Amino acid sequence: MLLINESHPYVFILLGIPGLQDVECWISIPFCCMYFVAFFGNIIILIIIRSEKSLHEPMFLFLSMLSMTDIVLSSSTLPKMLGIFWFNLREIGFEACLTQMFIIHSFTAMESGFFLAMAFDRFVAICNPLRHSVILSSKAILAVGISVVFRAFLFFLPHPLILESSIFCQSNIIPHTYCEFMAVIKLTCGDSSITKSYSLIIASLMGSCDLLLTITSYTLILHTVLSLPTKKAGLKALSTCTSHILVILVFYTTATFTFVTHRFGPNIQPQIHISIANIYLLVPPMLNPIIYGMRTKKIRQRIIRVFYIAGV
Image 1 (spheres, one colour):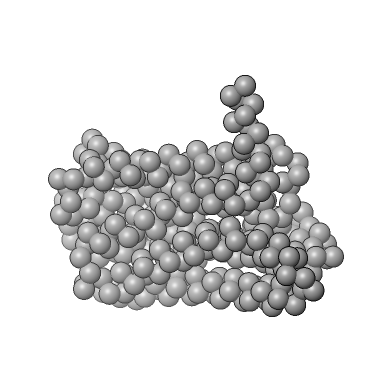
Image 2: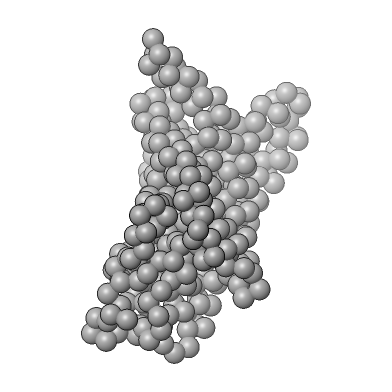
């Protein structure tokens, strides 16, 4: 193994999906399609929200933050993953590996935070509509966005710092498609149980708190909707939340599976573990623009208008 200052390797070798190397070319096809939809779909969402003044509302501003997060998150893994599958480019530099790892963990935390922000927006809009513009002013939206980013950076910056100061005495081979923290920490010397526990506790607490607050918001929304005088008004109010509820279900379902595979990793086949980890990073960024594009009337109308003008 090549070393720098006898502490860590020059490069890591990403194996891809162990046991499925013979079919990686075929696996790359759906992954490439997912990345294409995630990248360009979220770009379209950003362009539409920026160009349409009627969409300059808290919900859509938070959606634009989510779209930017999805673009960075998917782009941090897919190009390298496709390089592994198509061109056997399995090497990744040590610093590049730590950077990729930090982006994956921090931007996943940002995604969770923006989901919570969007849930809070729906709560205020439905339960306290007269104060919606006051509570979620431009300054408040900016503050929420900065807080979500700062929280993610604060709690996951220790990951690359710990590995930077660690001594590697194992192989430089990572049985994964990207630099996943748990896979890399196993290559270090000594007892890493405390570091692993910190990572799992931080990720689970942050995700659990966000999910609990999101569920609380929608419970209060449902209570308010059921108390509305007419059923039609209640259904109309609830329909504004359906897109958000769908993407939240996708995100937290895949996140839960990923956490379970880490917790019970030895009992799960590596092919299943790594496949779920890839789905966790690819499927939500792909589905977010599709679901919001199809379920949000203002965005759907704008997309139809753009394609109509382009066709003419």
